[in-house]
Length: 236
Image 1: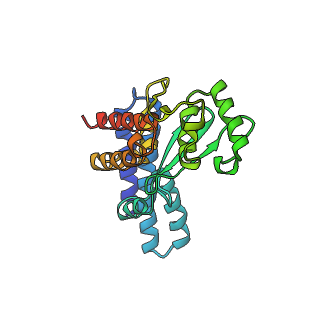
Image 2: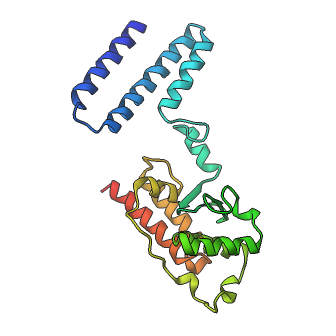
Image 3: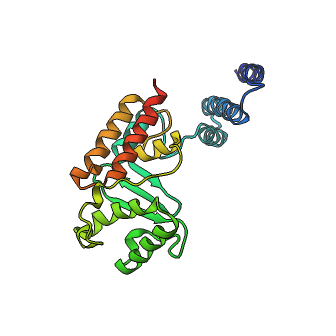
């Protein structure tokens, strides 16, 4: 059996080398990593049968790593269990990484750079948040609408007292660059390769929490809509 697995591995490597000679090195590396992961898991199963649990665990761990599995990203029924346990979206600017809980709509964030780098938004008092807002306004315009969304959840009615502007929730903010698929998956809280049903369900769930009519902001709703379009385009 080990000899057969070795022959299969060599055959797969030969096929990959023949078909991906001119391919993007990143694509080739990912393919080789996948092959190695599958081979390691297959060998781990054989070692379990032979009673070599120690080696099986070692190879199984390597195979899971090579295939990109983790305790929070397992295939099959485990993935469904993970999704049932909660899903979070992440939207990032130069200074802020915002997290949105799909179930509750709760918003939290981590400060990436600046005077408060490494701090959670919830750990800052109103005065510090004001300083952070001014810092974002000066150096990270994309972080401003993220902070505004956080303020909506933490400080009810703050918009009515800020600059006399009662319509800031319906303002859109321009953002630079084209959204990548990786960003779109993070915004919808999905794993790469998610199905059409998963994309649509995640979009619906978020829009119920983030639409301006539901107390959200136009900026976050626009980002969620853009993420859906990017991922749906993958299926067209």
